[in-house]
Image 1: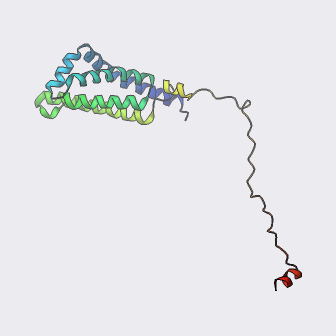
Image 2: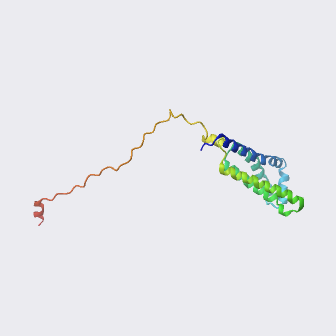
Image 3: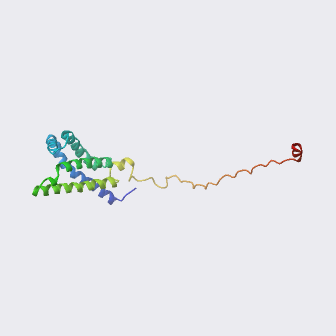
Length: 179
């Protein structure tokens, strides 16, 4: 399906903005992965070091896949999983009170907005200005109509006539012999 340049531009902008939501936190976590693992462990996450490594890898390579439009459903699913783990573990606003609660609630709700953007990306796909479209040949100029092979109109299929059944004629002599 070929979309207009405006729609493809909006889809590209969507991918860039979503990647921008992940990269600052991913770079900070990658620079101090042991601190991130300790934070996850203190918040009650089992195997915090393994989860921290997986989340950092997802948050570093996922936005790159978003920008390129590479494997949209897979990359969005991985980022959604990382977002759910970090938001559910680190931004539990209901455990706090006062200004901390308001700050954590704001971050929690902003992460829900990013989640919604990833879900829309999963449904709409990356558009024609992406690696996936280039790989599949979507949006490339088609062959001119003059060089296209003309197709012959198909003939309606009619059943072939069957020959009439042959009746055996009975001779009077054969009837006399039978009696």
